[in-house]
Image 1 (cartoon, rainbow, N blue to C red):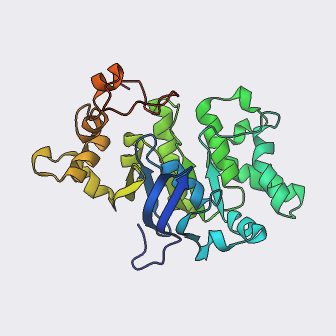
Image 2 (image 1 turned 90 degrees about the vertical axis):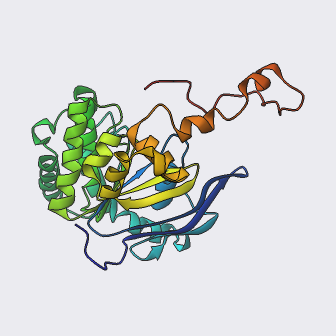
Image 3 (image 1 turned 90 degrees about the horizontal axis):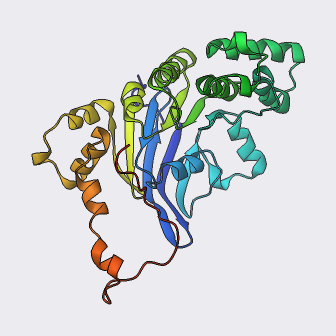
Length: 298
C-alpha cells in the first residue's frame, strides 16, 4: 500500500529522448510513490528500457526532467549523481555477476567500494543479504556453478548491499521457467514489504506484472498510454472489446497477449505486396536489418 498524499520518490515530467533524429520517448510523465511496486510494460521498442536508463541516470533527457529524491538528475555533477546512485540498486536482466568472483564476493563488492566498513562487518552484511534471497548456503559458489534463477537472486542480493531506498528491475523473469519466475515475483513482493523499498519493474511478462504490481504503466511507441492501478488493468483484461476506445483496445490486446487486435493491425497496415514488388509510388526501404520480430507466435 502506498501512503496517501505521499510525495513521489521518482518524478518524470515531459521526458523527451531522441536518437539520430528519431523520437524514442515523447513527453513521458510518471510518478512513483514510496513503498509501491510500479510495473513499466510495453512491447519491444516501446521505450521502456530507455525510460529505465533515464531513471538511473545513465541517459540525460533532451527535454523534460527525471528527479529522484527531489533531485533533478540532469542537474547533478558526477559526485552528486554518485550520491544518488548509492540510494538505489539495480537487478540487471542477466544478473551481471562477475564470473571470477564467488557469490559472496559479488555481493561484498559494493560495500568494499562505497563504504569504510571493516571486512568482518561486510561479511556479516553479505550473509544477511544472501539470507534475504535464500542463497546463504551458496555463498562460496561461482556464477557458473549456479542456475539462472539463482544468478538473478544473487544479483538482487548485490543490489541490496547498500540498503537502497529504490530497487530497479530490468526484465527480472526473462529466461526463467514459470516456477522460478514465480519465485522471483514472490521475492520482489516480500522484499518490498519487509524492507519498505520502492520497486520499479520493467517487463513484458504479463503473468509477473499482474502478480506483483500495485500500479502499472504501459508505453507504446514512446508514448505513455496509461498509468493505473492493477485493478484497472485486470478489469480491462476481462472487458469485451466492443465498446472500448482505440487506446483501450490496444492495451487490452497487449495485456491479454491476443494474436489479433490493433497492434497486429497496425503492423499489417503497410502494403507488403507493393513494397515487395517496388511499386513506383511506394517508398522503398533502405537495406538493413529488420526492426520487427519475425516470430509469429511466442
